[in-house]
Image (cartoon, rainbow, N blue to C red; front, side, top):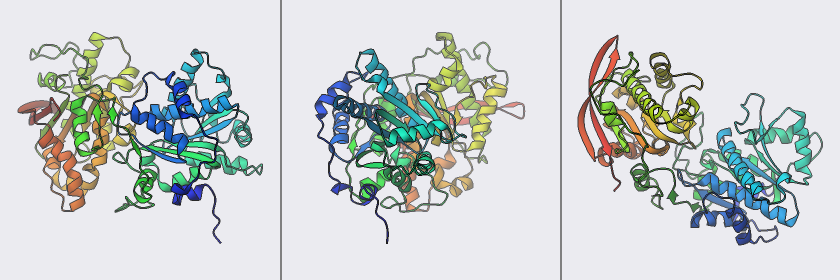
Length: 529
């Protein structure tokens, strides 16, 4: 006979039948308290998501890029803490995701709110602990306000005692695996129940498999609530096998499963606080018909470029070719730029694209150095991100930046795959698609033309987006109807959206010690439709 564990079973199969069993909360009062700690007040839909975390056992928050999802989750967590403190009771809140970066982002945002709360003189602050559980092989959190606990440390045993019989407010962040190990290793050892959490918040739920979410649900108290936040238009779970036709089944992410299979309607955030109108215009049309308005439509890179003279700036690396066209490409008045060029034999690595990307990065860094004092950590953390689909091209670009351009490896240039960039943002994003061989494009069409991968790539940019892409990708016609529909998101972006500028240019790069000139098309977007 199969054992049914509640409330996990009901959350998985009958969430609509879950009843509210906790004391009723004056959500307007609690919202008023939390609003005092926010940098900016919640908009209407953010407030709706806040209220539903109290009034519904399971609530979904659909947060497209830049819509303030992390801030809302932190506000919800603080709201639950405020309610507990006013009641004089303890509370245990779990924060989960598929990766530590997402968990740390939420916990750090909570720590910010708690800091502001303390500065305003609110009592009860010292009762709150913010903890992140990790394995010994994982990196500690970068925010030193977060308590770092190993699963094998003695502190973990003490933590299990505290959350099993709580007397204070504790926020515990961890992957499902680390929290499960904590439960098995220590709670079972002491014959303690592992129903710990009054509230579980799962961020980037569009990347969390259903099975992983179920592991979190097993740690809920009988009256516990769950908030799932994500965006199923961004990257989904990674499986070691191909997944087809899974959007309504148990093998997709927990967000899609609850929304599509169990008909749970999410609160959809609709104000985009990250990007300008040119960058947000295409996602609004193709991915977010429910609304994706730019809150800062005129946002631009705040740089002043030198006057074109035909000569490189002082100190330009001798191993990188120069062209005044780099100034045109980096122009803040063209927020979206695409560089297209003819097909050739590049597959996983592309020397032409790598050198152009490196040259634009060096120029951007040079201009910022002339105007502001900043260090390389700030440059790679806030100013520039470089995305490419394959690790070979990632290494190629990084090697050119370090070996040819003299960029420091402390910290290393942030050049990575888009999977590592989800949840992050930069003032300028440069995407190098690298693949320029027609046969290779056909072999990996579903990967290179994945619309969710392109959506994440584009929406990391706050002020400017630059993409280098070959005609082999833009002109590829997939034989699979589903792949063809997916490909249209990327291909039509270049051919139909980036039409404000369409001109032929020539760009130089160095090959076998000689400067080679490549004919390209410069396309761009100055205004959204």
